[in-house]
Structure formats: C-alpha cells, structure tokens
Image (cartoon, rainbow over all chains, first blue to last red; front, side):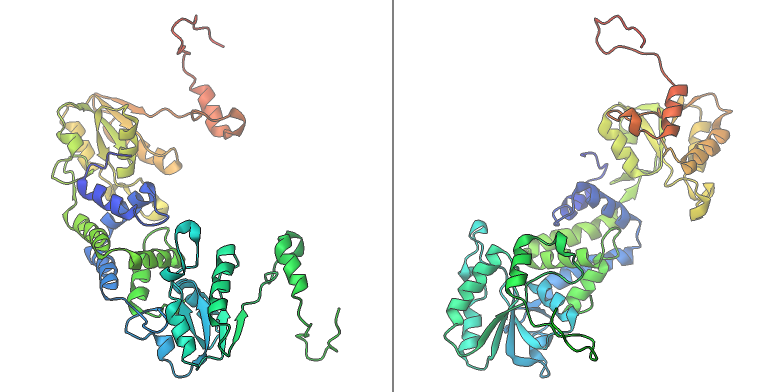
Length: 212
Length: 212
C-alpha cells in the first residue's frame, strides 16, 4: 500500500504502524477514524500521550509507574511493607492488584534474565532489591515470575543473592489452572501438580474433610 | 481493570481505548510501550496525529483526502477525466489505485444508503456527482460499491438520477474471486457468475481458444 493521496495521512499511518501489534492496514483504519473525529477528541488523545510520556515517573522504591516519586502502593501505610512480591513488569502488578488477594508491596525487575535477548542481571532492578533486603525489615520474598526457563533462571539468581538473609523465600503456586480439564493440561504441569500436592481442605464447612 | 497506579497512564489508556478495535488491554499495552520509547518518538506520533487532523483537506471535486483543495488524482492531467469511478470511502480509492488498473478519476460518496444506520441520500455526496455529470463531459460512470443490499440500493438510486444523461453506467464485475474453489463459493455468487458468464479468451496466445 503506497498511495495515501496525502503526506499528512502517510505520516500518521507510519507513526501509528510503529506501535506493537499495529500494521499498516490497522494504522490506516485508525487514521481515517481520527480524521472523522472532532478536533477536541483528537487533541485529547494527542496531548494525553505526550503529557504522559513527559510527566510519568517511576517509583524510587519499587520501580512501579507513578505520578510522584513514591507510588501509591509503597506510600500506603496499610500495606504490609515486610512482604515483597517480585514481578517482571508493571502489568503483573496490575494483574495481582486486581485479584485483591495481596496486601504486601512489590519490586519490579523490569524484565527477566534472558541471554538470548541480551538481558543479564545488571540490566534488571536486582541490586536495589538486595539493598532493600539487606536493611533487614523484610520477612518474605514472593517470586511471582513467569513459569518459563528465563523466569526460573531469574528466580534462582535472586535466590542465591538473598538466601543468606533471614527471610522466607516463596514462589506463587504452580499447578493446574482453575477451570482446566486434566486431559488438556500439559504433562509437565500435571506431573508437578502431583508432586506438589497440598492437603485437601473442604470448602463446605459441614463436610467431614475426608481426603479423596 | 481499574488500578493503573497513575492518572497519566489511566488517561492515556482511556483515550486510546476510544479508537476502533482497541480495547482496554491493548490500550494498556500500547501505553506501556510508549512509556519506554524516546521522547522524540512519542512527540513525532503525538504531533503527526494532531497536525493531520488540523491540516487535512478534502478534495473539492471528488472528496478524496488531500493536502490541498484538489487532490493529486483530480489534478493529474494524465488521468482520464471522462470516466468517474464511484466508491464508498477513501480506502476504496486506495484499494483500486493499488491495482494500477484504473486511469480515470473518482467520486467518493462518503458512505452508502443505509436506512438501518439512518444514512439517506442527502447524507452522501450524490448532489455534487449529479452536477458533475450534468456538465456533460463524462462518458462513463463505474459503480464500485459493496455487493450488499445497501450497495445495490445506492447504485439503483444513483442510476435513476443519472440514467437520462448520455453516458454508459457500469458496475465492477461480480463473480467467483480469483483463487477461490467453486465448492466453497456461496450459491448466490456462483449462480450469478453462471448467468453473467463471459466469452473465454485464452491467456496462452498459441492455444486454439476452445470453450470448455
């Protein structure tokens, strides 16, 4: 596709097509949509993007995105500051926050160790984590990384660095996802879920709690 | 999803999610991508959008998008100005231009007659088409609209308005798409393609041109 009849359109299409997951056809569809919108709408979009990029900050403690130097989670006195959940990026914080099951704080690595992509430990926020742990107020580190080789490598690297401090190191539970059928679960997950089986606790209070 | 840790991010996500085909999750992915880009990149995107919306024009003759009052196609003396191809919107112009098979000019309706969506003939650029035809320099009108009920209705409406002028009115060929297998072609298309069969012309010059 090369004939946009307009340099202005061509320019916008090329800029939009740089975004991940947006090809030239989608970029053109978005551009033609924008042409039809009120100027005030297009201004709001354009300015919100630029303003965000200009003013966004990263929390100096956990590296979460933030409008100020310390993010809302780290600044919240009701959160348990003795538990740190280690995640790869900001989306993981949002995913865990949406479960409403976690009341500790976070530490965002900004990636995981991946030699294939040229990402080593020094490219991640690991140094600052160790400094935080060394201050001695942490009781538990929860590793909430992807269950991939890169995730496991990163967990092991961090484990070696902090294992001598007096704290418990845990990983999030791995096993068969809730709602999944066993026959469609991959064998590695299924095998591990048998090895790491947990005592049965009935969710019906009146049941006698028999193991099956 | 409601916890973005940042009003700036929330704002950008909401603006991006207004675009067609972009939901909150995609908007968040794009936003987090933009945060990581150089300021100059984000500026280029933001400014190209706003500049395009501010400066874009529509060709006064054919209603194509344009950087000036008359679009490149209408201003080109090498195009055949006696043939007008009628299309629904700008994307159709691009699609036809990309075939490099058409050397006439266009007329963009800006939609098709669709009572369900509240679009009547007066909402489209039909009046200006009739004025153009009435000036008497047009030899052929090609109807290149969607092969839907709305497209057919629009074609019929325009046909009635211009049939008394001395010009040929054609529609683009409808039939089995090139590369399609007959057994998967819908029966209406297949039925019409039999009724509207065309003489066989061999593409091998040395063949004897037998009908099969």
